[in-house]
Structures are given as structure tokens and as C-alpha cells.
Length: 416
Image (cartoon, rainbow, N blue to C red; front, side, top):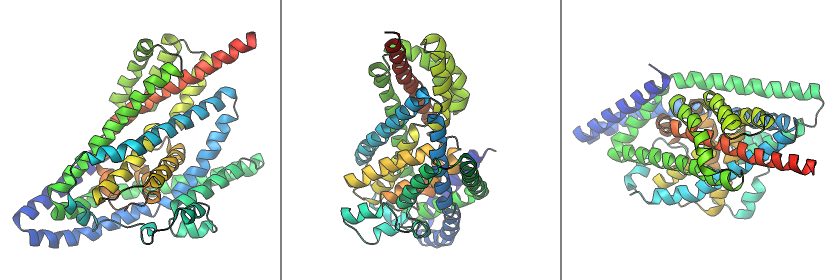
């Protein structure tokens, strides 16, 4: 049985038992929920303990990886700019759309009370602060203290400064430090894999505890989360088509014909890397892009660019806010969207289930929502993964069309 199947089995078993006990004897169900709750929290804490070092390492390594790619020439620099712009557009679109879409679904008031038993509230919610204090707090006066307090936004800012500073070091020093942080990231991922081995038990305990208290409300809420996430994945994928037309200079029919084979591979394999040969075929032979552009931009896109990642992070935080009845301010949404872009650049290429907590938690915390539901959301997030790959492949081809058009313009201006 695959890891995904094991986790979904744990989710289904916990839900069935929790709902059955709640229907049979609510008092006994609550007693059982109180026993299961610490097991689920223990598993969730084990996942969370890797977040600070993993996020720090991923951002530092991601900055240096992007810097190395940008140093390889004009095409690479242009591609990275296109990646960042499209990631930002996708994140901002989600920050606007996700809260609105969630409001279209009925909210169960008992859901928040049930989730409180598995949630860990971030320190930021204990005392509201003004926008001036929030702005000042973005840059940490003590990076070690920020890490100790799991203050993710200041920690990411420090990681960005550290990553860019490393690009100015001598080659030997920089190589040593990048290798050090890469080793930290790899070690944390090993720990996460160990913890995920117990995911069926952890998810079983969490969902049993919540379903015993909230009944069918929890399952319907998770269904809403999956549905909204799928809708937003499809939306950002469709948004790429006008980008290819207006900024890539493509004819929509020709672009879709070249894109469909790669999308079919993406849907069947759930892997952007497996779709790369089909993308190269479509870009070279069907769209006629210059070979230097496709040979560099598409592999870079697969390794550095994942459009749907910020969509997932912001949607997850917006779902938790909806479940708790929290109204997110424009500042919270903007902060979450921009942080999601930074986090996504460092986490590309890693399995989604492995990094789900590490990548979603910083955004959720920066937006000021409880973190506990992330454990349940990890279990069901594998379901929309196919559409995530579909969106990523569409964005990869779109970015390549924009870079190819600019490269053609450069060639034409040089000739004249």
C-alpha cells in the first residue's frame, strides 16, 4: 500500500469510528476523543519541530540556487523574473479569490469548537498589534529569538538576507555554506519522512477526535477545502492562457495544441519532471521556440517554478480562517501572498506531502490563523495534487512563451 493510501485509510477509519461513536453514545465519543487527541497532537508536534530549521535552510538554498541560475545568462535572468511575476500574480489572485469562494459555503459554528482541541494558536493571536508594530517586527532584532519563538515571517526575512549575503562570498566559502544548509534541509526531510511513517495513526487520532465532536461538519468542511483548492488550481491554469496570448504572442489554438500532450502526461503521472519531454516537444516542434530558450527555460521552470504552490499555501490559511469564522484583513492576505511566493521558490522539487507542514505553516502563522488543522489538511491534500501538476505544467509552457518572445525581440533588434 502506498503512503498516500495509508494516510487516506487512516483518515477514513478515524472519521467512520468518530461519527459512529458520536451517533451511538455522545458521552463515550467525547471520552474516546479525549484519549485520541493527545496522540494526534504528539504527531503534529513532531512535524512542527522540523519547520524552523527546514524553512531557514530551504530559503537560503533557494536564494543561492536562483542566483546561480540567473548568473548563467540573459535568458535565465529573464526566466526567473517571469517566474517571480507569475508566482506573485497567482498568489495575489488567490488572496482575493479564496476568502470570497469560501464564504459561498455554509459555515458550521460547531466546527471551530471541535478544531480548538487539535489547534495550536500562534503567539501573534494572543495580543493584537498595530500595523506599525507589525511592520517593525518583520525585520528581527534577534534572529535566534525569532527562531525560538517560531516567528516565521521575521525568520524568512533573515533567511533572505543571509542567502543574498552568501552570494557575495568567495566561491569556496559560499559552496561550504550552501552545502551546510542543504545538509540541514536533507536531514530535516529525513526526520519528516520518519514522522510521516506514523501519519496514518496521527491522522486517525486527529480526525477521530474532531469527528466525535463536530460530526459530519468536519468531513463536509474538508470536502469544501478540496473543492475550493481544485477550483483555484484550475483558475490559475486558465489564467495562463491569456498571458501566453498577450505577453507570449501566441495564437490560442496553436498554443493549446502544443500544451495538451504535456498536460495529459501531468494528469497521468502527477509529475512535472515526467512532463518535461512532452513540453520540450511542444515548445520546439509545434511552437517553434528557439532551442536555447526551451533548453534552458523549461528545465529551470521544472526545478524552480511551481505556480500552484502559493495557491495552496494561501488557500489553506483562508480555509482555516473560514472554519474558525476569522475575517482576514487586506494586510494579512497580502503578507501571506508575498510570503507564499518566497517559500515556494525554496521548496520546489520536494514531495508535497513531505514539505506540506513546513511550507503551509509559515504562511498560516503570518496570516494569524490557528495551525492545528494543518495535520488534517495534509491527509486530504493529496487528492487535488493531480490538478496542481496540471497547473504547473501549463505555467511552465506559458513562462517559456514569454521568454521566447522577448528573446526573439532581442535577436531582431540586434540584426537591425
